Length: 243
Image (cartoon, rainbow, N blue to C red; front, side):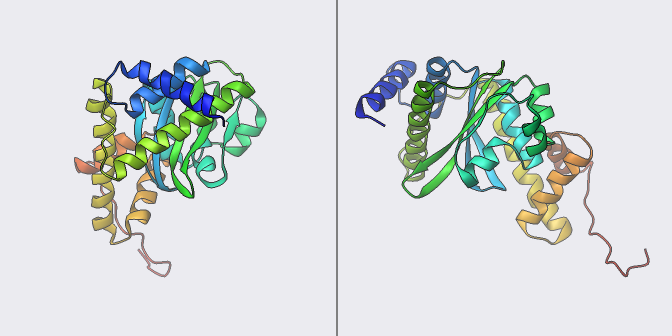
């Protein structure tokens, strides 16, 4: 990437911030405006199974992040492991085969194309920038080059935040009240399942996600039922247990 492109992207982000401290919200909003996409989301990832949405620009992008968390599959998951994923038309059979649970759900929530780009600073992988379009269609070479710079910019902000340098917070009010709270509930529910089953946090989260998938429900809704004690997990009987 050229210095001119980096400078131009930072200028766009700065204009979006209006002089305020730059945040992930400003990076995502600038990316949506510059790349001709309909929404963007940033997911912070420690591993393919340990991740959390840091920001989403609208309800559809938030749904896409949650769907991938629920199903454990999708562009975000593949990108963290293997690099950029550019799904230009989710109606194509290859994507139904690649992500059999995520693809129909993503189409159902209004996404026609999804582009996932890694947030990486040197050898450090931090997460993924997801972009979506309502209508199918790919990114041009110029747009893709810009998208990679937006991803690098988001990665630097996350790295600053990890180092204690606050990037600010311009999240939308509905996100603070609903989406962020929902993620906190998932963490709380995972802890409760961990205690109920006597398993690791990763196994507890997998059981929670499997329940959501098996009952065709959102992960956040299942987590809320666990926290409110409407759902309780019990250990599975051993294979030789007659019960």
